[in-house]
Image 1 (cartoon, one colour):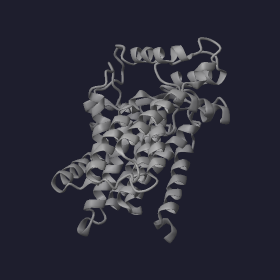
Image 2 (image 1 turned 90 degrees about the horizontal axis):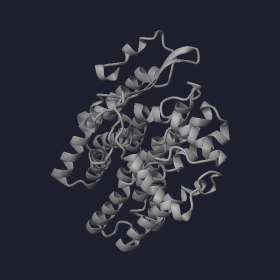
Image 3 (image 1 turned 60 degrees about the vertical axis):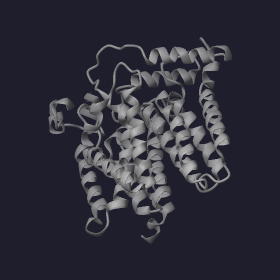
Image 4 (image 1 turned 120 degrees about the vertical axis):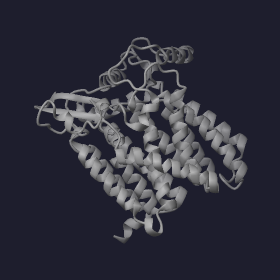
Length: 408
């Protein structure tokens, strides 16, 4: 048992648990659900190098789904296999961020476990969509850049920059993180010149821009080999404009649309599936764990208040991660919003809770982190049947888990 109090064995154990949990019964349902109807056909087109499909998004996420199909077959396992890996990578990225910030296995493990049992992460790790890949790369990039603050700065900074470029190559929603990384480097380097030793401002920004842009453009490589309408060097940049037009087009109303301000309150989650499948009534509800989603807001308020009063930079950084990834949705020119857009901000809530526990869980409050883990674990178990497509008793069984009218 002593080994799991050390950072590496603890990380390995957490990763194995996450991967097992995300993989169990991955093939259910055996049919396409929710946005898999868009991304799996696009992945098949990439595998066949046939023609462009789902051209409103870059290629990398669909290429990864295609890689899963190549490894495990054109079936439910193949469509979702690499999403489970992305989910585990996200969990370990959270662990790495917290370990680097606070140097505590307990704090890092708390955040990682809360990430595992947060419903958003669990559901996205078990569906062939793009957001899981994007989030894993962004979280990994943040972890890499934090690790470079003390050692091997150029290597870690370049790694993080490449990962950000790849994240944008999954979905453009990751693009603001390039600007955030540059701003964070400028601010922290100005306050603490010893951070990122051997890397000054101009080289850092040059690496960030060039490495991320190069990585992003390389994600379009498969499209140059399409049999029908292949990309060329002369059409690569105009294709970006065409993608922007599709991203910003005005769409008709959708059953599960919701406003960005409602996402932290869990007012309108999304049913990815609710229908008879594989011989039973089943459902998959994309909903966050209330203990994490609402507890995270309290933790954010505590972290932000403490940063303002005490100038504790780690708590300020944790708060900024959430605000930066959430506030951008207030200005992105999208005609419709959906709860799953909140996926990446929801991950930072686990980081905020762990950071708040590290700062405040002392004395009479020393067991707060354990209590919260128990509550979050119990809530996860409660919602598990309608996140994991378990067989349900009847067509109206959803009423057991729909706490509010907006959840129907």
